[in-house]
Length: 90
Image 1 (cartoon, rainbow, N blue to C red):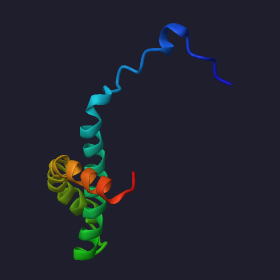
Image 2 (image 1 turned 90 degrees about the vertical axis):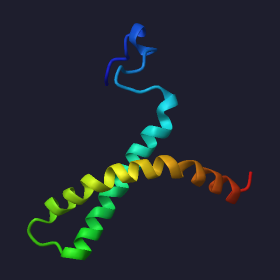
Image 3 (image 1 turned 135 degrees about the horizontal axis):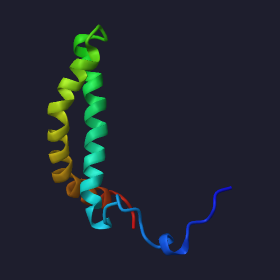
Image 4 (image 1 turned 135 degrees about the vertical axis):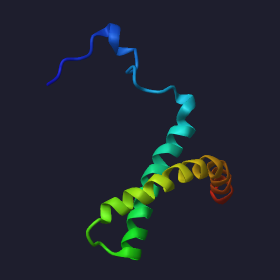
């Protein structure tokens, strides 16, 4: 069993954690990063196959796709939230 945290440090969040107000940007970053990588992996595999150099081609495509996906998620997120709220019952 681990020891409980010292009371003086228990109330402080870790120094590396961002404030809650950055949640939309952090969400967009993670969502864009994961989705861009998965889409690049699938599209490169479908287009050129899983031959040698596959990972390099995926990473090359990802270098372009990630920033584009990040900006798109930042702009699309509010629209998706409104569509979701319009679709669900209160």
